[in-house]
Image: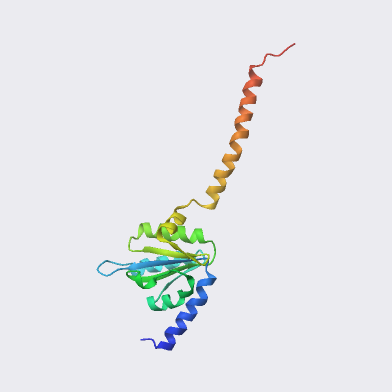
Length: 168
């Protein structure tokens, strides 16, 4: 069992890690009376997150609560089940998407919300962020929308030129 000094040190350590991450997701990996994530699933989750420069941390709710006290309206103690934090250091949308894909395969992983740009976003807002298409897909759609009027004009002009009778 950790001493109070060790718990305060853990809270301070976590307090320094949270602002360094672009997205911090509050998750539950096990609830009372339900089957949680197995050790193999937890290892898979950690490997998945490590591949995108993110971490998964499991600690006591009181330590997490102490670490995020300055972050606004985060009520950690009301979150049900064993609590874990997924902290993404790079692209927040990639982290959200990977967590969402993992949670679809492993229903024991559930979300409570996230800290994004220093503000708490609800579970619904996080899910909307996670379901958003990737950057490449959005750029492809934008390119298609920009290209469509020009290609349509070219097709129309080509058809008009075919219908005109040559004057010789």
